[in-house]
Image 1 (cartoon, rainbow, N blue to C red):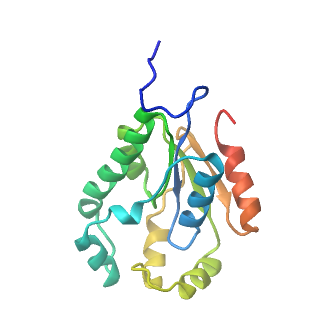
Image 2 (image 1 turned 90 degrees about the horizontal axis):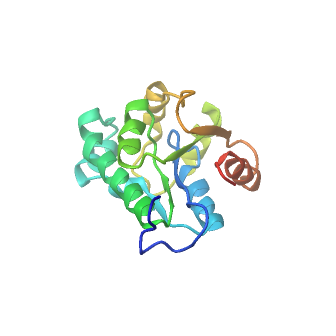
Amino acid sequence: MESEHPDARRAGPRLPCVVVIGVSGVGKTTVARVLAQRLDIPFAEADDFHSPANIAKMSSGIPLDDADRESWLESVGRWLHERDVAGTGGVVACSALRRRYRDVLRAKCPTAFFVHLTAGHDLLERRLSKRADHFMPTMLLDSQEATLEPLEPDERGGSVDTGPAPDAVLEMALELLPDR
């Protein structure tokens, strides 16, 4: 039997560690923040874990390569692991576009559950064009869509279309979570 970590906030079922994934503009941060609020667990924005060099590269319209992403994904994975060990659960908004990126996160936090947000290209372009003060330019959307590898059947998670109203998207995301 596993002993409970002394920092665990609550007794009962284990609180989830959720990674809200998808391309830029799909609503990861919005959905992840509201999901964390609803579940009363910590929230993190994976963009905050990027190095200044990564941000400068993306701001210049240059897509990151796997070497650029390695330490970033390790940091996000550590954040998830710490929440899992503490028993607090957590929700992080993180693109995690490829299976191997999600594998890095799962290696740090095997209980991670992925909510893949989807939307049509035109909607994503409209959302991105309205953004202010974000380092991810609209011109990288095509690159992200080409890179995206949807969740595979053996990955813990599911997909939600973000076309409907935000409240409906949140409810669909909550329905996906195990042990709810």
